[in-house]
Image (cartoon, rainbow, N blue to C red; front, top):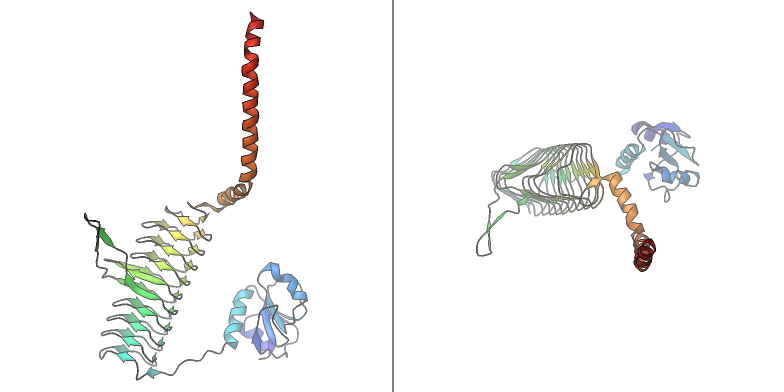
Length: 352
């Protein structure tokens, strides 16, 4: 692809030779003369002077580079578009493989692709152009929208609903039983049947080995545009708003609400029956035991304002030194008190 064509398709302003042939994309350190790369993080700006890339996607404010430049206000987005242009994405052929198990009353939209060893239960519906890869399991009465991709070993349990353009990565389970039990007097636990559904709205992506549980009543709902990373646990009855971002190993306990635009970094844990307000951000390994107001930026356990956590974290490194200083001060105070105890009788006699 000519560089000028790449610039046009990625909405970039070209500085350099538009006739340059671009054959692929690569990281800035690995890129060669036929590659396009990008710099979005200021810490990598120095690499602009040494990169061997044919072209680099940069911000409008970035300094000059040793190669052609594609300038844009959103370099990361432009690079994502470039990757898509060069990606070798092959759609499997439409149709139902003879080795798939599809119930007689399943509704299949046009141009669906059903791979070998897929299982689709009675009364399920599969939308147009949806791809079900090998070993995907769709439960009875489940509904999958149009243009979805379910990767190998993904499971959508009975009566659960997926909207359009949903991507489910390998091994994810949608509609597994919520963790609900009644403790009995003899120490055992009586299971509460988890019979409600999970609803996944349009344009949601669910990472590998993530689990989204169904509740006993009501529903678990993931709103449109939300992106969920690998190994995330969403408990029964959770409500997640639009365009939420959940990084790997996040856990959200039952009946909690995450409002729109919330961002939880890796290994954040959220207790049950809480509300995490719109636009809240939590840094990695934050523990959230209480509801959080909209627009908050929290860290630590229990979660506090990020600035407070940073100050406290800075003090932690000084604790050994502070401990020594306190011990020394205690020793000096004890010494002074001992001296005062010895001299006190002499002062009393002098006043007499």
